[in-house]
Image 1 (cartoon, helix red, strand yellow):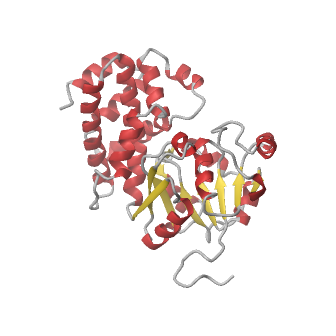
Image 2 (tube, rainbow, N blue to C red):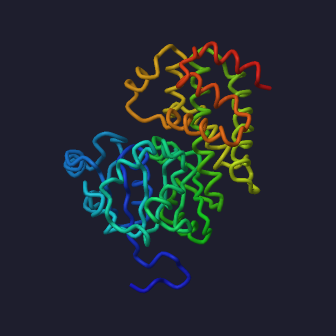
Image 3 (tube, rainbow, N blue to C red):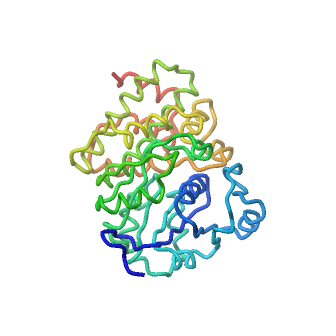
Length: 339
């Protein structure tokens, strides 16, 4: 079909989702508010069969009901890519590379929205850069979803705000039409690098928040910790990608606050378990979802070997998880550095 005048995306463009976790399910709920059809890659054939029978994801956000007659499911990622103009990636960053090993379809003419808040382990790359370099998607076609938005609250249709970052702001506005709805308000920015790094860092800060909570520190201390956390994030992001940005906006500060304080935050939960005496391995085994900050803190620590930004909270989390230092000892040392 001919491209609609003044629009980058052609009229009647198709959308596909890659991933089937809680965030992917929440995003599917948003998309279905705006599109009559959806393509959805779900790795497990058994999960697809159950989904078709029950009308809901059998593992995540099971209360969210879908009209499955409007969804094309497949466990073949290439089939979903072939059928979709816009692809929304919602796979934990630690598993993105392995999920793409079977991908053979050309991605160079696709439009991609990343809903992944993490770094690619070992390569220490933000997801947008990895998609551009590895999958050959033009950087101007890549959007990033950021902002304070837990999947559980989306499922309950509680008002949430999301930011779409894309170097092409016009395209970013078109992306907002895919996810924006009655309970999702949207804004746009061209700061794709800053929002991605901030989304990575806030998970690390949330682990720290959880550790201190697990150790018995109260709300007074948490306020000081989060105040220092946003300053630490600003120092790092401004060093790695020095442009003008408002670190107090919801894509940065808002996302940090909800991840550090919310009962739904898996990173805070992971940290709290460490603070209460769980080993890293036992905490991971007990959690049913991935805490992205576990992988992120190692990557940020390695990246910062080059930049040498002062990051005492990140260093604290790294020392607890990878240095195997006692959380009580490490946190006591950190309290002397906060102001």
